[in-house]
Length: 137
Image (cartoon, rainbow, N blue to C red; front, side):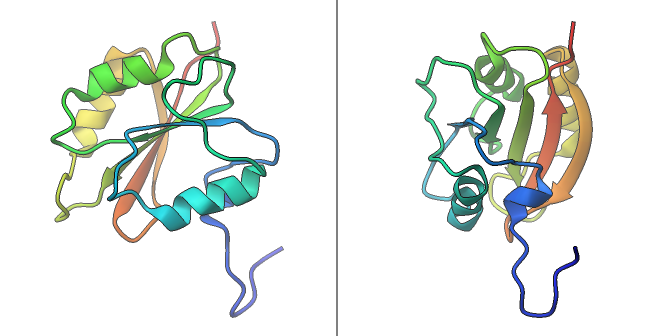
């Protein structure tokens, strides 16, 4: 079903979030896109869980800016003790925005962390999302 004029498309649905999924969030700060966070919570029907959550999750949301340190370390930290097949969305500021991270840096970090990159999308006014997956063994 396509959206009609005036009907809002939930960006979380574009990212593949489904009802009942548990989404763990890393890198939360005041600059995150709050509308996107709310859309994810609306799509899943539950609150995002924080970095300290130690149970099984279906997806990881990693907000990352160029001054947040090493992107490979952030990825490894976000996938520690995660099961195969978990989807990781790395959200980085768009080009020309404060904190911009080059796509090549995300790609290189993903490869180093043993993740497969599947796609990138412009998902919010100031943020780009890169979808990574933890390959099944």
